[in-house]
Length: 375
Image (spheres, rainbow, N blue to C red):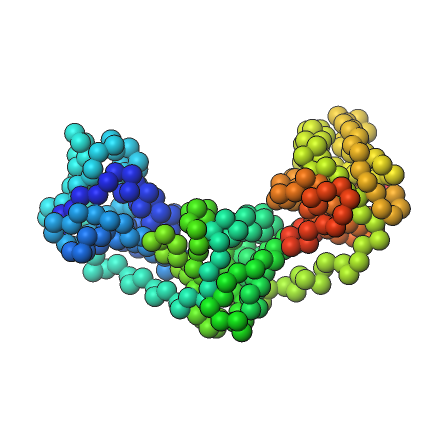
């Protein structure tokens, strides 16, 4: 193998491929990135950990086609630090030599024949705008669990019905749901997939700048999902198990709701929460025209603040985990936030609202369990 490739192109490609590398590879070869130089003038970099695969193809001047397997994280570190000059990679016996300007590195190779075959991308199911996908994934994954002992809750449930795509995630204390339109390959497509939130976030961040992302689920009955955009391909095994029926948690109607300007509310919650001890809530009391926020009590430090709020219905007091509340508020892209209530001991629903007067945008809903206060 002998080729030349632009330094920035190489660094970006290696960083993309290295994202799928396991922290503790079960076999040494899974710590490697596979380099495949094609005589047609392309370099493909691949990685795989038996669950997630990443593959990217970039243009290169290929003098001698070939394949090599080298340490992915080491190659990523080296590629980032290279000078802004074309890089040359050459296979020399059991090593790959990487030269760039006056810099020269020799990397040990691993046996290519021991590297597993990457999974085949399922047939494309449809496309959606990269920026929309990135926003939707960010809004939902904040509510996914980080507890690996409950793998089902670490995933994002994707429901596809025709041109409607719904993403949902919960950690039992909050639930985020985003509904959006996409461009299916078939109008009668119907599929359900549970994708690891961490994988989905990485795909969205790295592919979101592309104009369009292709999602591949095939017929929706397999155990693999794939994404492709801008020459980058990624597949992931789906999480196995029955997702809880969380849609029923959203109340059919809410007799009380309050509308508050979002940015001032975020700042007020942050300030008041400074005195909140670990696992203690921020208390919110909504009365006509006013939202009072409080934290701390007794002999502990205390804080309070008041904001303007438009209240519809009776006065209500409720308490939330401050970080969970901030996560939901941060996921909104609107000027105003609407909090809808049934009663102080039941979950509240957070939605966005563009104007003080008007309807809320229910394409994104964030349900938050209240914290019960001592009597």
